[in-house]
Length: 535
Ligand code: GLN
Image (cartoon, rainbow, N blue to C red; front, side, top):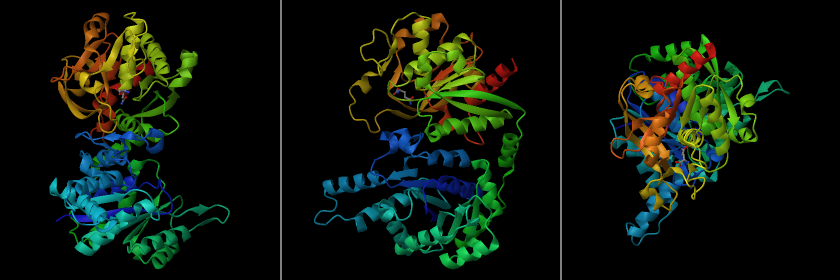
């Protein structure tokens, strides 16, 4: 049977439960344990696919086509292992299952209630991962902050689980904030004391406190926290602000978080965590020999989390190339008023981001026109590729008014269009082309050279596709389809061989970039920007 670790959050949201969970998991993985992480989100949406990126940041997509919370991206980037639908569950999904069962008559004659029916379903979902693999340890991150009404059923399920399987098999880590009051010149423990009390009200005594702080925790302060929160002195862990999220596993190692967890779970310690590759990555990340500036043309720029995986993929590819990649967010709408050359000055490359809807499209097309004509490295992802094709159709093929039917359903040149099966789809939740699909690469193409192979699998999340009716015309004019889905013949990659680096992909390569396996296309793009910077 697997052992369970639950991670709850106190005082405020955004303390980095995902990073702490992923860092602990990394240490345990590198000690030789088979481990996975799951996230429970307390909102009613069945999945985050229908949420605006401004509300919840990027929607991460797994190989099996689940639209999930962006924390799953951190789990994959740290553990270098794919996650799946079972790794992310929302309150909406829990209720949907229970209500469907009720309608099917599974509870005939019974009153269906939060306890036991909802809590039982939560517990079933927590344990579901055990059927997937022989895990030694399963970490479950409970979204939200202790004290929220929405989190209560999860905490109750956790209390019951502890009762069922015992504290040696089920550990609770409470991540909390120790704020620094500059007027008093002091770190304050009171919010944490209150947060632990709130947790105690639900019948849960945390075993370990992980304390987010901007200053070091003194020994006295640790003692005080241990005393007031009823945890052991060595179980008060400092999580000081770090330069990069990738420092956190090493900070947790220094605090012995992994050893404390193992001794509380009565597990053998295994060997010391094998972090050579991780440290090498950090060494390259922190000692770059080059620097480039890349423009990220998007429309959700106010919230960097909206493009989380793209930012992280640049970190990985930057370290791979020993290059500091400075990403400059550029609002696509700001490019619609002209002066594109001035606005894109001093950039060594442009990435045009994924997105939905009409807003900002013309700005993206203007940026692409500029970098195509000026031989500046270009990388377009999903909507970014679609815009690159539209730009080429309008300005090279001279197809006036060419655009995606997402923007204008009545365009004369529907160069990006819905597939017949999508035309009949009305429901919005979970109905896009989602998850991993095969892609065959044309030998000798830039893509094939970057990957070093001719068959890959990449993750998708979109409704619209390149309209193959235009394939020949495009090819003749110099834009080639270098990646094709072998089953459906859909175009997945386009490139312009004449250009130093001009690549558009219909899939989301950023979702598969990890510390250990930086994505080949990001690596190649960063390399091209370095070349461009050197002139
Ligand atoms: N809006 C486009 C589509 O649905 C692109 C989606 C995306 O960029 N993820 O096809």
